[in-house]
Each structure stands twice: as C-alpha cells, then as structure tokens.
Length: 292
Image 1 (cartoon, rainbow, N blue to C red):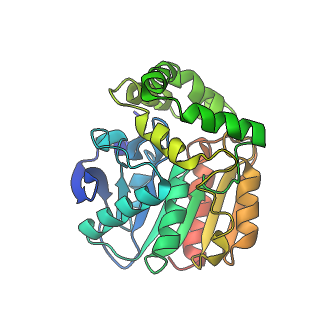
Image 2: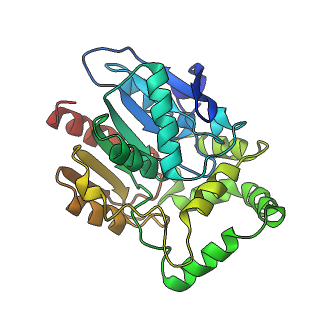
C-alpha cells in the first residue's frame, strides 16, 4: 500500500475537455480548500499526493484532479499547454463548487498552478510549488534546446513508439529521479510502472512538452511574470533535483513579493514524496503563517 488516496472514490466532473476524474476528500468548512495538481510523465493525483490527501483532508476539503490524458482521465484527449490545463482545473473547481482555494502543484503541476494563479488571481489565496516547471528560459543551453524542439516535431508514427519504449523503463527512471531510492515509500515505483503499462500512457506529457518547446526558448517560461502574483507562495525543492533546477525556484522566489523557498538537502525531484515529513511540516507552517 502506498497510501489511502489509492482507495478513495473518484468523481467524474464535467469540464470543457470532458469529464475528468477528481478525488474530493474532507469537508467544506472554515478553512480554505486545497487543490492538489499532479506532475507529468506517469503521475496522477493518487500517486503524487497518495500519503498527503488523508492528513490534509482532516480539517479542510481537498480537491485532486487527474488532468486530461492522465490517471483517471486517461481516456480524454490531452490539452497540451499548462495554460489550457489550468483552465480545466478552473472548470473542475467551478463544478465541485469551490471558489477561493490554496493550490499546490508538483513539477508540471507547478506550471499549471502558476498559470491558474496568473489567470485567476482572485481565486488563488495561496500557492505551494514543489519543483515547479514553467520557470526556465530554455532546456540547458541553446544547442540542447534546439535538439529537444526538433525531436518534438517528429511525426507521431515515430514519437509514439518512442514513448512506449520509454514507458517500459519507467521504474528505472523513477529511481534515478530521486536522491536515494530507499526514501521512496513501498510500492510507489511499482505504481508508476503500472500507470506506464496502460494504453495511451505518456501521450499527454508528450503533448505538454510539444506545447512548451520552441527552437530557441521554452514557451511556458513564466519567470518574467511571477512577480505579479500576490498570493503567498511556498517553494519546496530538492537540492539534488536533476530534472528541474533548484535555481529556477530560487530566482522565482526572489521576484515574488510573498514567497518563501525551502531547499531540501539529499532530496531529488519527487520532493513531496522523498521528504514527506519535512513537506508536511513546512506546509503546516505556511498555512498557519498566512492564516490559510
């Protein structure tokens, strides 16, 4: 077992992209609801937030959607960009009946959360960003950027077999994404492997990357806009993250008026899973500090 979230019921919530699967836990009350947005690849709400939905729902409503093309929404056509995914999250929140919320996102989900905060600033009362995407001007250097863009332009007849080949090696990839595989909860890597074995798995993340890549830069770079986000923000980033540079979070936090950055030593990309106890402490302090 990797956490109670795996057994929670999933609601089908209408959006402009179709009916997305959403975990809704806890009860509406005086505390603001928290929205949990999963990452890319083979992620889904019940993996990214498996051991956190239960504790968070003890005193507030938790809403954790699976974005189109992921998890319980795998059958839906992917929507591509983080901005389009933010609109889907907004639709789901409207249907669930929650307005002002705290939004937490990991990796690609952090990119979605940032877009939601920029597009609907009155809705987002607080942001929690775990190794967020959307804050880099390019992939490493100009040459690597150009190669990544060129690869993303290949036809599906070539790209989709590559996606399926990569899916067969997800277990190894997950263990390389963390600083110490021993920190992973039992069964978590196997859950990613099971997701990768599903038909159409990985295509939505491919479409996100295709939407983000340009020949010379990343189209989803929000680093010149985040300074306008008024919501208090917690950045939580593993110091040994090899997928999203901690420097991206450091630069963004320095520009934002109410941001705090936590860099976790001996921690990789899956920071909220690898350092779950530290994450819960920092999140709790953040919620208390800002009376959320």
